[in-house]
Image (cartoon, rainbow, N blue to C red; front, side, top):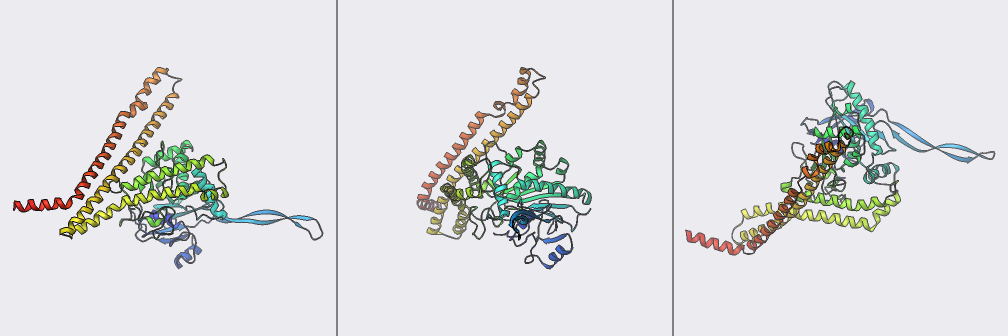
Length: 526
């Protein structure tokens, strides 16, 4: 595990602190909490946490926040029965504790659920303005029943069946209870929701299933490195559909994803699926995969890959400079779909057992996935290194002269040649993906209009209905001719970049000769 490099982004701090084993952690720790925190834990219902320079998305200074303790936690004992011999012969049934776990509003060890409620004041009051509901992601995979609940009953159910997962149902109840408490104790406060990995699936499913009046209290939903949950939410209630639409229209949902991370890229770039919220691609520190857990910056799924600006915002990739990141994300998404589709076809209705998953991980097919995945990231690294190379060459050229300068100029041209080829391929892939998403949205709109028209056919004639909906058919909303023209223009752009690369190759190979002629001409002019 690799931690954030600084604490100026509040939501990233909260999401990271929900995990055990972190430098700053919410769960009780005698070794990692200071004296003030431990005393507050034992004497009060809150624990102060300090995140230096932390700000929320509105720029509010929230360097000190307060964890509100869950006083509802109790130990639940599950009893089993066993037959034991009696002293005087025969048998009797005796009870024993076969399992025990903690359970409360924010905790259910049996379900693997761990959430934390944080505020900007020591206690909920009229002075409270900001509260935060934080959900922990998956604990490390192991044979422990507590960890298996994360992986098999939640992750697996979501991934293979787009299920409304058990932890999300618990989070929904807890969010509603906290919002109800806020209504009387802190009427001026709002709630932000955040989480990482599995915590994103739990968070978004829980939020959209809140009662309509609770949604008004949701200030922001900030999710880190989790899959898109649109397909699971599409299977939910009409109120859930209204809630998600309202939150999206108000711009309240942000997904931060790493294009090199398979968890972030799950369910993304899928045909016919409009991703939830504002999807923001992080600019990672390195070209690591999700499996590179021992790297100094952590895997692509860890917080150590985050780069944070001085104002607390996270560094994001942009198409002008980092097209290779978006192209890699599309490739990773498509790769996941390819292998996941095979897995789902072979998955029994009840899901995979622990033994079956282990067999899958050891199979040759999984190794093939890992190879293809590593190749995508390696290609992105090659395409991305040109930025650093070009900048370094510019510095060297400015300090060089004579033959050394000419050699460096030739090297710079060769670097630009390779970049031109990469840009053409990246641009074509990103454009085709975006255009397909637009076409899918038009299809969905046309279908929705058609379905709606079907409901009024009892009141109008067939021709009246047709006349009403004909302007909104796909053929009128989507210009296939223009789409084809756009695709051809992108293809031409790619070809022109190829031609440019070839011409630049000639320049690079004859750069010394061009330089000599230029010098002679300049001398004659003088």
